Length: 599
Image (cartoon, rainbow, N blue to C red; front, side, top):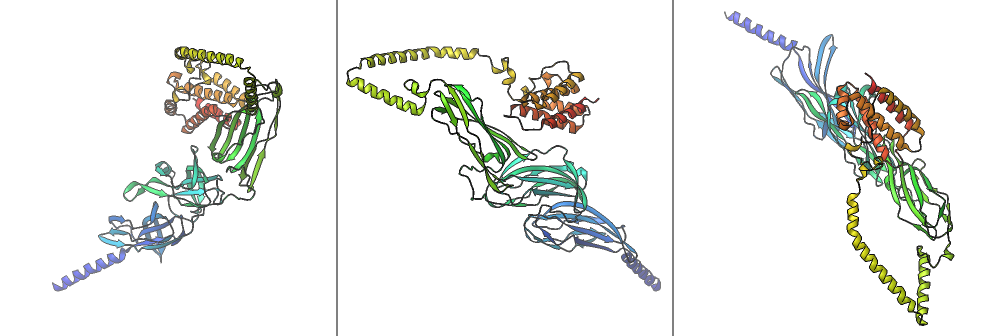
C-alpha cells in the first residue's frame, strides 16, 4: 500500500515537471533603439514568449510608466521563430514613444498575469539628444502604425521671410485617417502665421524609413518670423482612435518640435524708404489721363504685385508739384494665402486736382524691399508722369482762385494790403457795402438750411433701397441668402449649360475678370439646380450639397463644386481679381459640370 502511494506521488511530480518543462513561458521588453534624436519616435515592444499558445491570460498587460514620454502609437505584434529546431511563439504589443525634450528617460516595467502567475518585464532606459532641426524625424525603420510630423520649408529664414509649415499625419492603415479628431495647434509665438485651407482628398502614399505609409496633410501654414534668433514651434497634436488591449480608444499623437533660426535683415545697403517688405515684388504707377482741364480730377494709381509678406508693405508717398492738389489716398488689398504662399497685390488710388492750367510733372515714386533669394535690397522706381492742363494759368487768375495753398497765401496778403491802403485813404465805403451783402447772404443761407432740413428727411424716406434699383448687380449684398439672386431662371437644360461653358471659354482672355467669374457662378448654380431639381427660391449651399450626395454624386466632385463656387463669389468682389490662371479655372469648372451632368 505504501509502495502504491509513493509510486502515485512520484507520478504526479513527474507529470507536473514534464508540463512545466513542456510549457516554457517568459515575458520580456525589447527596445528598437536606446539613443534617439529629439522629436524622433522610438518603439518598445512587450512580448510573451512560449513554445505553445495553449496558455491563458488572466489579467491583460498593465502599461509601464513613461514619465516625460508621449505614446504616439500602438500595434499588436505576433511572430514565430525556431531555435535549435524548436518553435518559439512571440506575441505582444509594440508602443511608440516621443520625448518632449532632451534628457534620459525610463520606460518602466510592464506586468501581465498568465496561468495565475504574474510576469514582469525589465525597464528600458533611453537617451534623447538633438535640437529638433531635422525635417524627416522618422527616417529610421519603425513599427509604429501612426505618427504626426511637422516640417518647415526653411530653417534659417530672414525676419519677415515667408516660411511654409506643414503638419502631416502618417498611417499604415488607411482607415485611421477617418479616425482623427481634436487637432491642436502648437505654440507659434514669435511668428506671424497665415493658415492655408488644405485641398480636399490630399491623401498620398509615401515611403518612410523603407516602409509604406498613407499620409494626409491636416494643416498648412505660412509663417513669418517677427524677430531674429531662435524660434521654437511646439509640437502639434491630434487624437486618433486606435485599437488597444481594452478596445478602440482615442490616443493622442504628437508631432516633433521644429526650431527656426531667423536672421536679422542686413543693415548694409538698407534704403531709407524700406518699410520691412520681404519677398519678390514689382510696381506699377500710372494716371487715368494725361490731358485734363483746370479743376478736373486725375486718378493716380500705384500697385505692388508679387509674393511675400504683404502685411509690412507701405506704399510710396506721391510728391506733387505746386498747385496740384492731392487728396487722401484710398487703399485696396487683393492678396491671399495660397498653397504656394501669400501672393496678390496692394493698390492705392490718389485723386489729384490741378488748380491752374499749364504743364505739370509728377515725380517718380520709389518702393524698396528685401529679396531673400538674392539676399539684397531692391528699389523699384517709376517713370515721371507729365500732365497737360488746359485753362488759365496762375498769373492770370491770381486774384480769384484761392485753392492752391501757396497762391492762396499770396492773394490773401495782397488783399489785406489793399484793404489797409483803402482805409488809410478814406475809401472804405465799399467795405460797408460788401459787409452788408455778406451778412444778408449768411442770413439767407441759414434760413434756407433750416427750411430744407425736413424736406431732406422726406426725400430720404422716398429713396428706394439699393437692391430695388435697376442695377442690382452692382450693389448686391454678399450675404449667403442673396448670393444667387443674380441668377435668372431660364429653362435649364444641357444645351444651355454647354452654351454657357463655351461663352465662359471665350471670356478667359477678357480684361474684366469679373465677367468671367459672374458667368462661372451662373453655370455652377444652373448645373446644380438641374441635377437636384431645386429651384432658385430654395437654393442654398447646404441643401444642394446634401441632395447631390444623396443622388450619388462623387463627394470629391461635390467638394470641388463648392470650392469653385466660393472662389467665383470671392473673385467677383476682389479688387483686381484673384490673380488666378483662368485656363485652369475653366478646365476645373468644365470637369465638375461634366461630372454633375452624368446620369
